[in-house]
Every structure is written in C-alpha cells, then in structure tokens.
Length: 325
Image (tube, rainbow, N blue to C red):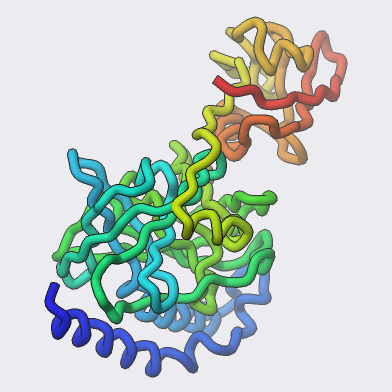
C-alpha cells in the first residue's frame, strides 16, 4: 500500500474519532442497570455501540497466515503493534499479511507469544500512519459489564467488512474473561471493547456454546508487554482435561450422570465415580450436559473447581483440579 493511500485511510479514521469522541467519553445510565428498562435505554445502547464500532472497526484487521489460515487482530498505538492470540500467529519472526477493512494490504512481523495464556503480538512494517485504538487499564472490567466484540469471522470479506456483536461479561478470572458475544472461527485474535471504545480483551477460545467464549484479559498484555515486543516466546498451549468422557440425563432431572470416564484422570483423583450425579460446578447448578460443558469450557489446566455430586442420595462436595492432555 502506498503512503498516500495509507495517509488517506488514517485521516478518514481520525475524522471519525473526532466525531464520535463525545459519544464514547461519558457513560450513560443504562450501563449501570441490570438490564434495559425502556426504549430510551435501548436507543442509548444502540448509539454507544455505533460510536464504539466506528472508532474500533478501522483498527480491527484480518491476519492472513498463509496456507489458508487466518484470524483477527487490532492495532494499538502509533507504532503499528497488533494485539492478537498466540495460536493465530503461531511463531515469532514470521511475515504475515494484514488486511484492513477497506481491502488494503500491509505486511507485519510476528513478535512475542505467551502460548500458555494465548497472548500474541505482531507489528506492521510500513511507515503508517494507521488507525489505532487504546488498551484499557488492567482490572477495569467486571462481571455484567457491556462489551462489544469485533472480528473477521470466517476470514476477510470486503463486502461484509468487520462484524460487530454486543454482549456482556459473564465471568472474570485472573487472565481470562468469559462473555456471551457470539463468535466463530476467524474471530480468534480479535478485540473485545468496553463501552468507552478501549480494548479489554482478545478473543482466545471459541466454544461450542455462545456462552463459552473466552478472551485473554488486557491485563495479560500489560504485564508481559516488554517480552512480547522483544519477540520472546514462552509456555505451551494448554489442553485442559477433566477425564469425564460421557454424561447422561438423570431421570429425576437433578443433574447429569457420569456414564464413562478415564482412569486415572482429574475426575477420578477428585473422587468422582461412575453413576455419580453432578448437580453443580462452582456456584452454578447443572441441569444438563450443555450447561456442564459451558462451565468446563471456561477452565484451564491447574484450575480448581468445586463439584456438587449426588451418590446414593448422599450429597458430596468434591474439589477437582483440572489436568492437561
């Protein structure tokens, strides 16, 4: 992309920023409520989502890794850094293609990767300037917060451009956020924004359930920033495992029945046995295998979780530590 084209793109983005700044600067009352209560509340949400999307979409890019692999990312600051997921870029020192929403293409070099927590960084190689957004401060997102997800699901599509989805944060862990924003393949590495238009997370694990989507907390990028910029690679991708292979329905709808499991495994070491009825995980009641897998999808290797179990009508409280494949 020639400098003149890049400059036109940048100044168009800058103009949008100035127009929407007032719309994203101050919170509105609806975002302090458990749920919208009126048509006016819905209009406030709509206006804020549109403002965040206009600010964020130009900086949300598609990453082409070659060999049919692609993901998403978001440009941070003036130096052309791109936040993404480690599993998207794979290795440091690679040259990849970056597609902007208007179809222009730049190249970037992949930098550092924290494979354990799935945080990755790349940097554009051209001179810029480029549209960019800001990272939120660490620890500023909480359960119930409204969030906006952007990405390129299914890969880059010029006619469709960036896809925007609204949701809420369901759970906050030390380095992982769970939201109900609907995500699919190709969204991985894309940004999760708060309602002030700042990045609070990067899409990491996309679950089978729309409630099982996990995002790397922006705090992980803050705490490892220097190592990522220096191109360091560490950790390995986790494959958490519980050891419960098959579940069935309970005739009295009290939970899910353990039908088949691996031994030894995290489940067997926790004391779970065949025929046990799992009625709860953590503070959530479990009614079917769908809810069971929603909860398990949020866990990582080494996580400890309380399991509520019925065995011969006796209620048991077991602690399970997630294993790793």
